[in-house]
Length: 485
Image (tube, rainbow, N blue to C red):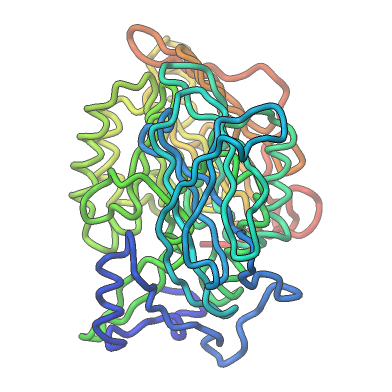
């Protein structure tokens, strides 16, 4: 385990039984029990966001919409207030076209979860909207001690297969507001009617390069109201965990306090990790979210593998998309993620998964054949059916150097490049497009569903030349910001 803040972020189980109990019920803790870390391992103050702007207020903030297992009939919202707003309250109404939403709005209540931070105590609220009508626009607002938020609108999923668009983001993690925010906003600005956002883990760094509450404040500010009106589908990365010292002196990990507070997720995942694994079915796509960190470091690999196989076997969706953090095929590290590759890749192959969306490597990779891009191109030319397409991407500012397999193995790569991905879903076709931070088309392919399986075709639209560093010079002509892993 590494990280410059490790020494200060290691948490002793000697903190007491209350902390241990909170850890055992991470899905719905009564209290986080986390000490507030204020210093780096060398004794310096942890950096803060300029102006200290993220203190809890008497109006709701950090409002995040998430889908239920069946988002045609259920959505959920999480938000933060100061401690004066003890009750978790929302108003919900079928949207109308005049300013009379409150006339027929129903009061919906939920649960509150205390979280302490460097800004002081706050309450995170979670409310579930159930028994909704499919393919219907709803409006909701949430309550703070000083009054209601503005009205937010969302549309429930259709009950049947229907075309839609979703956004896929790799690690945001570093430079969240400074750099990653422009990528997220560009994605929404340039691509209308995004219906879901999927995050491949490491949404924040949760180390000592920025105060944790500031990191999550920046994450929410980067997405703004979009996170309150478009359902978010997040996967955990290793940085959603903090390091832990066990009584015998060995190191482990524990889910950080902000994850179970910030996201009201479906409770249909693998038993040991229900706080971080789940699935949701959206208009013909089953999105399955796994937790690579818990699988590798916390002993849940077999349980997640069994659940993955069962969840794919029971899927009636047209397309199956799996989302997790540590990639099967790495574009930055010397070796692939051996444990995940051995356990999950056979299930992906057996169950004919369509897309595998990942992060962690802080580079871009699209890979369709472990044998390499030439073998992949020949297979397509010979009319072969395409198996899972493995993607790795990055949205934030931390970048890693491409490894020595990238010149021949992936179909497409990028280095030192912030990216977002737009996927258009139809009953017979997936259109996958990758864009740079400034909105330039970088990569793309179509997956066409046939009776025998998927056929992949490269796009004929013009794309940028491959972006990678040349010595110390980056692809934009400045310094190369990618570092070796």
